[in-house]
Length: 313
Picture 1 (cartoon, rainbow, N blue to C red):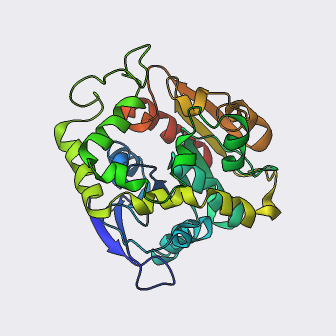
Picture 2 (cartoon, rainbow, N blue to C red):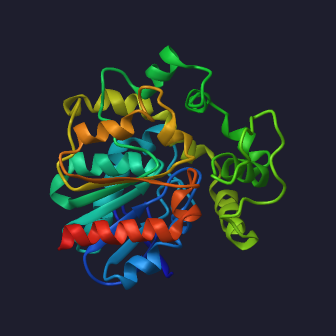
């Protein structure tokens, strides 16, 4: 997978590292936290072989892309702007946007801000939730401040990144273990994790993540979360907006984000039938957790190729 640095925005001083493979209709792959474009390593060659031009950036603040300073640099308008700038850089009229985790939060906003540039959306692990009457941060504070999504509240605090950067190897290992489908049944946060790495990561693959976060740190990736409330304030015209382009959803059956019915995230999987006017499938993969495209690559690839074919056909 060849990676190059490009300046995909109207800010020439900001560059992203992008893996670009294949020829044909464009597909943009947006990773989540704490990931990089490498998290799509199982999808990029398959989609390229299927006849698509695949673009997978390390998003701003991650990996080998640039690290603009300040929380405001990671607002949704900037993140969407990078995707549109990436298409402009390569002279691409429109693309299917595939997002996982935070990428699945950004992808719908690309569709809402610029529907003329989006042929379809594939959302992995995080369902589309339209802007509602309060932000996700206010929702968690009001309903379950000590529940499974409380980490989003912790991420609002200045300096929380120091906890991860004190031992990045263990931080990354813990996050990959605790959110994967191979975690032992009944495991709780007071239990010890299994030794070594979860089965979806080899030593060499894990080293790529470690090297990326050793370079970038965790502060700017966490700045994505620090914009959640401000993004809500800035997007009032899109309250209860529906997605009108083709959409598909993929998640692991053991992914708490997609299965915890907290009234804002997990319960929104079935609600996508209301908020997406052209929903082309909800796919829950047996045995997989949050890292679904790495834990079940063959199943995810088959779903994506079929979805892309339904759009291009």
